[in-house]
Image (tube, rainbow, N blue to C red; front, top):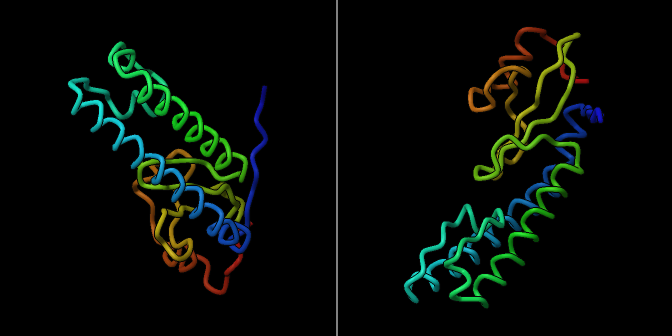
Length: 153
């Protein structure tokens, strides 16, 4: 099934920042809880890989500590629900650990991605669709290419 893209202008994308900040903060809280549970399991002699735990790929170690395994499974389901909530905003998740998302937009006939990262007060970067999101560039440089233009969409 073809997924429809949502397109944002700069104001619309920046309007999403408070919700995205909240969602990424919730992901971080879950990650801390999972880390604590993994440390508790380690103290009991069982090593649990945090990424495997968060993604619900629990191994036999959790069978030795069923309460910890059950809580990690519960937290991983909450984590995945929040990832779905992020996707539902129309933003494209680029890196969950950094809290980096992109927003599809058009700039003078060229489709690009506005780029925001958790902790940034506003959207200040962009990258091309086929470009690595980690090589994002300043919006100021983009606007310098088209003086007087302040609208993306």
